[in-house]
Structures are given as C-alpha cells and as structure tokens.
Length: 413
Image (tube, rainbow, N blue to C red; front, side, top):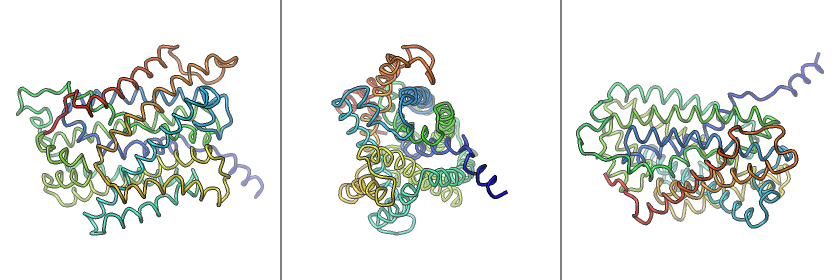
C-alpha cells in the first residue's frame, strides 16, 4: 500500500490552476498598481482597448517561446535557446535585457513595498524593504512548488480583498466620472500610445515561460496555464480600471502623476474619496498582496534564468549563489536610488519589448526553419503571427522613447 501511494504521489501532475495563478501573480503587481495612473490620459474606453490588445499579443508571444523551446531540454531558459538559435551577439543583448527587466521590476516592487509599509505600519521604508526581500525571496529559493502554493494563497487573498474593496468602490461608481462627462472636450485616444509600455509590462510573465514548461514537462499544458493566467490578469485589470475611474475624477490623478505614479500616493489619493475605513484597508491589503505575488513570480523567472546562465547547481549552495545574483542588486539599488513606480515600470516596458515580443518572434521563425520545426507544438496563424508580435514590440518601444523625448502627448492631470 505504501509503495502504491508513493508512486501515485510522485506521478501526480501539477494543476493548471496553480500554473495559471503563477502567471497571473507575476502580472498583477505591476498592472494593478501602475495602470490607473498610466491610463489616466486615455481614460476608460481607450485604456481597456489598449490593455486587451496587449493581453492578446503577450499571450501569443509566450506561446511562440514555447514553440521555440520544444527543441530543448526542459530545464533550459532564454540563454541556452537564444545562443543556439540567434548567435552570441543577440544572446548577449537579450541576456542583458532579461536581467534588466527582471531586476528593475524587482527594484520597483521592493521600493513600493517599503513605501507602503512606511505609511501603514510606521516602519522606516528601507528597513521594510530589507525585511520584505529577506522573507519573500526565501519562497523562491525553496522551490517552484513553494511559489505555486504561495501564489495560490496570495491570489485568494487578493480576490477576497479585491472583492471587498472593489465592491465598496463599485457601489460608488459615478457614470459621469467613469465616462468623464464633465470634460466634454476631453481627448483620450492620443494618450493610449504612452500607455502601451506600461500595459506591456503588466503582462510581462515571460521570465516564467521556461519555468512553466519545466513545471508541466510539456508545452500544451504550459500554453493553457499561460492563457488562464493572462485572462485572470485581464479580468482583474478591467474591473479595477472601472472601479478606480468611476470613483476618482480624471483631474485627481495630477498629484499622483507629479510623484511619478508612486503607489503610496495613489493609495492615499484613493483613500481620500473612500468613506469606509474597512474598504480602504481592503484595498491596501490587496496592494500588498499584489506586490508580494508579483515579486515572487518575477523572482522565480529571474532565478531560473540566472541558474541556467551561470550553470549554478540546484544544491543549497548553488541556489544561494543564484539568490545573491537575483535579489541583492535590486535591493541595493532600491536602498540607494529609490524613484517613481511608473517611471521604473516604463523603462522596464521599453526594454521588455525585446524579450517579450522581438526575441520570441525571431526564435519562432528560426525554429520553423529547422528540420523538425513543423512537428510538435506550434502556434497557428503562419508567419503573420510572429511578424505581428514583432511589429507590436517595436512600436511599443518607439512609443516609450517618443514619450521620454516629449514627442508624444503625456497627460499631466
């Protein structure tokens, strides 16, 4: 009996729900906290359109990575695949991009968590940031399954606090505010271009694609876990956008934008229009859970990437080396040079176009040129799909740099 039970236990496959929760948790931290401020210019309709378009493209681009990875061992990541398919120069640039995007996202979460705890618990922000990294990163150091379990718990906490907090907001939604009726001459579409880099980062789960493939042992289940995760994220984003934009007038985002979209400023501004203290607390709990879940999700992807890049062993000593390279640099930078959340996410979004759109498209096209490239897992749609993903990534990067040069309209409040 013991032998049979052990055999069944060891052959049990991971659930799609767990994988979807990992993908969703990677996404929602940046999205939930960054999209309201970044979308204040394009407002309700154009923000939702931009977010939905981005979700579709980013889901497909993750599938393109799976298609390229099918030729390799289950434990490889960007480094091995890109080096073999696209050469050392492209691989070097891609490695820099992967680490930069992952690092700056971790940096943004560490800084934001410290600011939130400073306001809610009275802790000094730097002390809170150090404690946050020490506790949260230990989950990533332990194992992918630990991240799975913690992600499910955090998603449950986010859903409960989200339901309670958003319900308190939805009952106060004013359609005139939601549709910005007071501003009859308002312009919205022109601000959507500046939103795309933030929206792209809000679906930036691609650090975890290789982890998902290794977790399930094949591409098809990983595909559906990715789709489930991005759908969960999109649903939460739309509900959140409707709740925030239906409660907080467009001009009220001026002070938040002036502080580079810092999360603590957004929460304080939102708290000023929420009459119920319990609702305000629920929103704060949600924000903390969102940052924590994204931190461990992104951390897992970067952790696996670093282990593959430097060939660190999966022993305790090897995982400790990987931990140092993954988490110590963003923590130090957060302590020395804290700056605005939206500013950090914007830079991450521009750089992320390389690893989330450009490289996946190039890898998929290269994969199909191989002798067995048309066998096994493939994304339908022919060459149109990778070229469309490539074009979206290039356009998004251009929009970010045009915004930084003040060549695109930016909403100031």
